[in-house]
Image: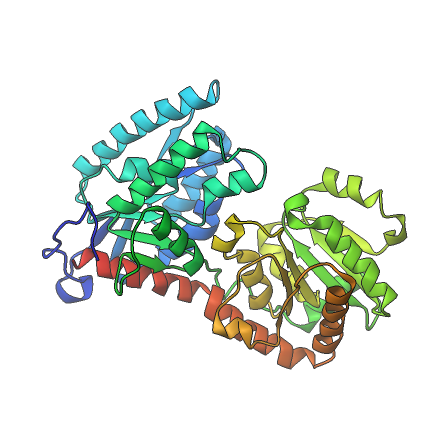
Length: 421
């Protein structure tokens, strides 16, 4: 494994051998509406502490003070050192440049105050700061965020912003001692763009997203029966569930079309939407009067999500097919599987061998009548197999691909390799 940022770490043995703690600085650059740090990375970092890793976190964000304080409280409860830098919003280009300069200075201050064994930069801007820290540098791409902005129409491929940042990302890949991504396709794209040749044992690694298996699990028949009654479901009715955002990129209209088609094929089903996009959902549902009474819209606290998934029969994860989605591993699919739900998938790259032969995942090819008929047949088949057997198979696949323990071990394997160089 090689990179311009390589450093000899012969003095960094495993904690289990000589009791040395391995200190990691994690730098992340987040928007105001995301909680990846608390929801995704906090559980992983918390578990990695058991293996001798200690994390300091430096977050740059547009979050308001209330959001920032909430994040700080969650992180401090688990002994994670947390620093925050707000990004000015009065002028996005100038504010971004200002935050990069100030962020680099604060990162250097943290480096002087602590002896870090490595630094992780999540996303391009965070990577630009992390790559200058003079310790082994990990670039956590976490997908292809720049291309996602193009795919969602926020940027143009010809825009100078996109072109400059694409060039910066290629430079980060060159500088990094380790590059992390969620799919092999994502790593292959970064490797190609950086002009690197794939070699055995090179610096590209796959890490997993994960959810705590002890929290995301089937909650039992009592919870299922109570919630289904409160949702107005009849005995034998099939409940599809969509969790999270319902914007155009999540194929919401196609989902409603599938619900109508399912009824035309004799499947007695309803749709549960666990979302906070109430205004958009209401606007679209007004175009579908035939679905009156068959779509249930609600929201709940994150700790109650497994209850509602337990009450459901089939999870739905639709995402419009586009270039950037090939590098994404949707955590929503893991939440469904861990709670024992067979899942309909559209637009996600699930190429693992476990998925290809699984009976609890169905890849919807498109929304033609023939493809939707196959999907309806699969729903009828899987809901008729027996709840206990289906739950067990879904849960097992979820633990393998999206469990917290699997995610922790994927990060541990990569970081152990780095700090022992």
